[in-house]
Amino acid sequence: MFPERLETERLSLVRFGHDTVDLHELYRVLSADEMDRVAQFLPWEPHTTLQETYEFVERIERRWDSHGRATYAIRPREGEPREGEFAGNAILKFDWRRRTAKPGAWLRKPFWGRGYADEQTAALLEIAFDELDLELVAITHNVDNENARRSIERIVDRFGGQRDGLLRNWTPYRGEIADVYRYTITAEQYREATA
Image (cartoon, rainbow, N blue to C red):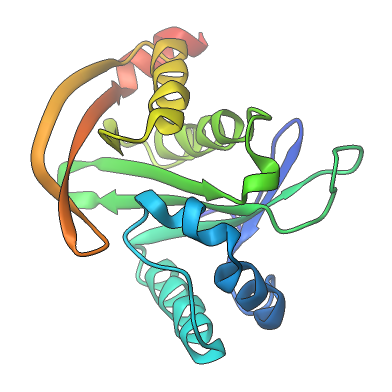
């Protein structure tokens, strides 16, 4: 149902799973000290065992197979700094009843500040609107996550969307429930922006 691979100008996004991500490499990444900062605004914490990483990949594969979520491993393409290295993941969650998708991503710290978040989000929007014919993409970020805010606002401006407002007590983050800002892009706005 979802494309197994996406290529952007600088990134390769490949279906995230046991066949495409080395479990030991992934565990080293997800348990590294750098993940404390990366996972600060994610609903999970850095991993402490290889079994935890294995179960993480299993959940991702089950969600793909059930059509609830498409998750991709992000790797810089040839010619990019650190080409081929695992940089993070991109996620597209689905609410089929509402014909809505919600993109998300995280990148390892060495890959911050390169515009990769914007590039992979644009690729996910293309899947949502051009391939799956959904009606709305909703993007949220923790009110304290300034990096996400800047990236999301660039994407929303580029594709004609808007900030809908503040959702209080919305998303669990490390034992607390955080407020988030929500932005949306409709299929009509996307098509006008990409015409």
